[in-house]
Image (cartoon, rainbow, N blue to C red; front, side, top):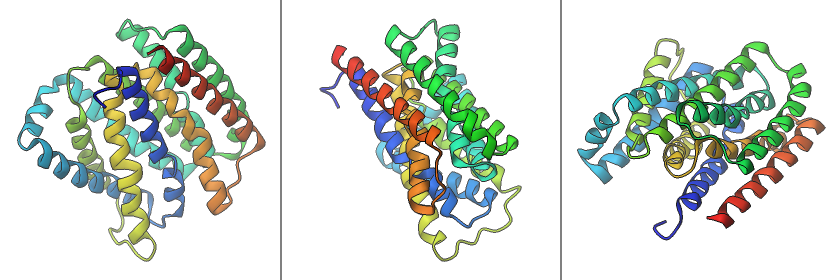
Length: 286
């Protein structure tokens, strides 16, 4: 990583994070755990995994980094906690495509927030990519909205807002490590779910699915996504999340036959092509 430019580091971190995230919707669908049980385990398992991992690496410096994050850390704990809850509840209350399409508005929201609060308007390449992908999202949205639930869709959009605010917060605190704040956010998520959870029991395939999901699709990506905006603008980080808009429903389609529409496949192809071209141009320039 030392030999890579900031652009290369940020793009690589964001890309790897999203690849790990793409089967997340599938795991949620495959699980038989109730909504708040999922929220609890998606909070407590990543919290334990990353917390003890960071204690081994940083020891007591973990707490120094946490307190040094200041108000940026508090904002990130709040947004990170909210998005972790709304994402799961959204997936459970609408089809996967609807939730991921809503989340796909995050790059546009990040660009707007970055321009307002960080005085960091997106360059022409990023702005053009956001416009093209947003049109593709609208194309998908008009078809998928007919199949979903309004409550789940709204929570999906709240998740997108949280992702945008979180990425901009990290970008504005480039000198600070906000991973400890994200770890605390996971603890908040698990604590909040305790008020609603009906059962802690994991049975049969859930004994494998839930821990696997919590480590591969939650713990590893949240560390990478928390680091990536320190190297590249928030809007660029969230552009990579658009890959989940198409790859996530394809995982669900292949395994449990929840088939995406032709509009989702066509719009997804445009999204993937746009991100590939944008990333190639940015990396070439760096």
